[in-house]
Amino acid sequence: MRHVAPGFTILAALLIAVPARADAPSTTTVAAVSARAETIAWHVVRDGDTLEGLSQRYLGQSERWPENWHLNPKLANPHKLTPGTRLQIKVGAGGGGPDALLSRKSQTVDDKLGPLTWSDAVENDLLLDRDGLRTREKSSAELTFDDGARLLVTEDSLLFLRRRGAKLVPEAPREVEIEQGTADVRAGERPAQNDIEIVFGDAHATSKLRGQANGDSRVRRATSGEGAFMVYRGSGAVEAAGTRFDVAQGTGSVVPASGPPAPPEALLPAPRVTSPASGAVLGCNNPPLRWAAVPGAATYEVDLCRDADCAALVDRASGVTEPTWRSAALAAGDYFLRVAARSASGLDGYPTLVPFRIAPGAAVAGAAAATATIAATGVNAQRGDTLWLDGRSQLALVSSDGSSPAGAALLLDGKPAALEALHGPWPTGPHTAAVTVAGACGEPETLSTVRFAVDSEPPSVRWETANLPPSPDQMAAKETEKRRRFPPPVRWPLPAQLEWSLDGISWVPFSWGVPQPWQRGPLVPPAAWYSTLDDPENPGRLPQPVDESVLYLRAPQANPFRAGSPVKLEGWTALALHVTDGGSGVARLYPRPIELAKGNWVLRIQVADAVGNRQVIDWPIVAKSGK
Image 1 (cartoon, helix red, strand yellow):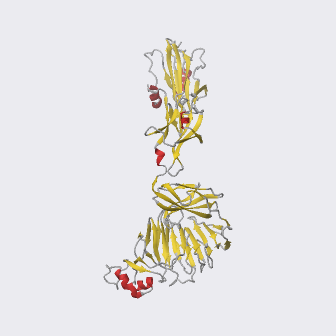
Image 2 (tube, rainbow, N blue to C red; image 1 turned 30 degrees about the vertical axis):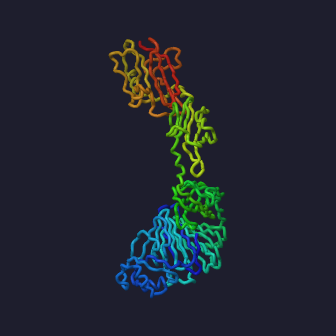
Image 3 (cartoon, rainbow, N blue to C red; image 1 turned 90 degrees about the horizontal axis):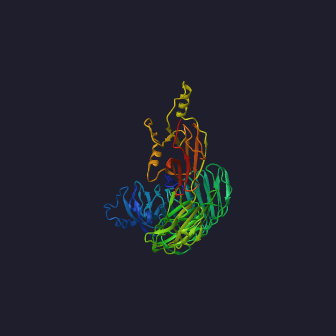
């Protein structure tokens, strides 16, 4: 926020054509300082310019034109100037024109001077009537006017100077017009001569500075057209749609895109910055910036600047939801942190300004984060964001040199614990482990975090009769029986048949016993199941662990299970085998007929989860059946 010079009038239009960031409104600040000292600036020649006229305009003495000629040795004819030529000109107080000097710029700033197109701005460029200034993301510029008044433009802004009448006089009204962005107005230490009127859309806000010192107010207009007027010191007024409110110190009013303003409400207090301390010298180059939460704050506006006025913007963040923020790496030097809370209604509260310094050779905060990680030893499986362990596995802090980082500390389930607690054992269920060390700024720096859980139980198995619709082959068999005109012929013994399915629709037979010449052999199962069943290294391995897998069984001929087996299948009745695991997930389901001893056949169903907990079920079956 800046001072407005008593007796100085300016009409400016702040237009943001295509903002680089819609959530980061631009800010314009008007301030007052001592009159501009004589300096050398850059002037772009316009139609009708002469050295005598420029010397009169900027120095108040036309006879000093030879001094300006000597500053431009390449100028062959001092009495013939070509429009668009850049000249070095002496500038001092007393000219009286609406000229502005680009006294400071930070990062990417462009200007449009006279007949020239937009180009990279140069410090000490002179801006005249209808000249423009444009700042990019995380950039800022400061304009100094003839009488010492200053205009601060922050990121993503477009500003044009405008002349009102042939000459500006002290009695003319001060006015700033905003299409989008923010204007900060602050009176000087001496009482101001005039008020400041800020126009945004159909609304008018007046900062009452006449006869006041240290007046301080802000107007902001969003891309949607909504606006807000805040008074930090002094008083003001806001008017729209025929409704006017006086706005007292410490209050503000929200102005909708159309319609009258809302009644004034109290502004939020300035946040209390907890880190860094005021004047602190920090040993890391991107310190965490923290402040105490402000009751009623919806978001926070954060600026990081090289100066107390934030004319040299380094970084900023808008709409910060938590009371902490971290910028990119900073070079050594002095900085200022400015934080303000924004209410849910959209009013900006009082700001806090905290100076601090980055020491030369400062370390990078967080640089130690890659020196060690928490890893599992033993059987483990990653599923989603959880690392699953069996009951015998351990965790360990693994670093490149095999040692634990100095000062490493463990948080287990959010509570401090010894590093040895990584070795377990832990109760069944989910856990979180985080290892930290002291960072370059002294704050805890996280080396590694892992969410893990212990699964010591195998998958559970249950079965039930499946109510499945008739399959095409079942329907075909029934139709064949209906059309049969003679009793079925006597058959010789056939191998007992058992079929399985993963979806209850497509069925694949198991075969065992001695194949007969008339058998065509088993059907080719689906490719995914076929490959897992035939994989000698991982038979029955599912493509990925699941909470539940279902295997359907049926016997289209005779019941293949021997007496005493817990299951029985006759005709086309199907059995649904449900394998579930709420931990690491079902990873293996492998049913197959095996011969335990000569003539002693069983259907062995092996199930396992992702960390190797397994269960084996044997159902006795007959090797052959027939009539």
